[in-house]
Length: 312
Image (cartoon, rainbow, N blue to C red; front, side, top):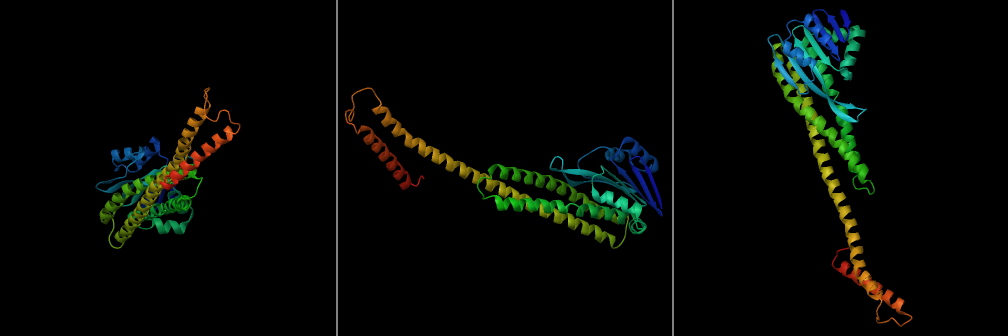
C-alpha cells in the first residue's frame, strides 16, 4: 500500500488498484494527473478543472468520465447549492476531483489512509465496486438535507394559520421553497446520469454488482420522489399563505372603507352646521346634543345597514 500526497493530489495505491483524489483542483494538480494517467482525454481534464455546473457522462474506450452534482447546505449564505464531483473510472483506477466540502469523500480518504482493514475492504476489490461505494455514500448524504427540508415544511404547516406571523412566515416559505427548488434541480439532473452508469457499468464488472448500481438508482429515485413531494407541498403552502394574507388585507381594507363611508355623512352634517348662516337649532341651547344625537343615529343606521347586507 502506497500513499503519495503532492499539493492537492493524493494517490492511494493498494495492490493493482489506485485512487487519485484531487481536493480543490488547480492547474498543477491536473497536470500531475495528466502525467500519471496519460490516457485521459484533454477535454475531460479541462472539464474536471472547470466548473461546468451540469452533470454529464462520457464513455471512452478504457474509462468513464462522470460529472455529478450533489446538494450541500452552505451555512454562511444559508442557501443550498450544488457542489461538483468529477469521476474518472478505469479498469484499475478511480479519480475523484472535488472542492473538498463533501464529508463522504473526505471521510473515506481519511479512513482509507489510516485504517488497514478499511483499505482492504474498499480498495481490495474492483474499481467499479469502489466507485459504487463512493456514489452510495454521496447519495445517502443527500437524505439528511431532504429530511431537514421536510422538517422546515412541517414547521411552516403548523404556523401558517397563526396570527401576527406574516413577515416571518413569508421568509420561512421563501427559504424552504428556495432550498426545495435547488435540491430538486440537482436530483433531477443527477438521476439520468446514474441510470446511464447502471447500464454501462457492465463493461467493467460481471454479476451481482450490477444489482448494486440498480439499487443506487432506486435510492436516487426515492430522493427525487421525496423532493418532488416537498416541492408540491411548499408550493401549496405558498399559495395558501398568499390567500391568507390577501384575506387579512381585504379585512383591513373593509374596516377602513366602512370607517371612511361612515365619516362622509358626519362630515356633511358638521360642515352644514358649521356654516356662518342662520340654521335650524342655532338658537337652542341643546343644539350640540341634538346634532350629536343625529350623528349617532346616522352611525347606528349605517352599521345596521352594512350588517344586514353582510358587508361587515
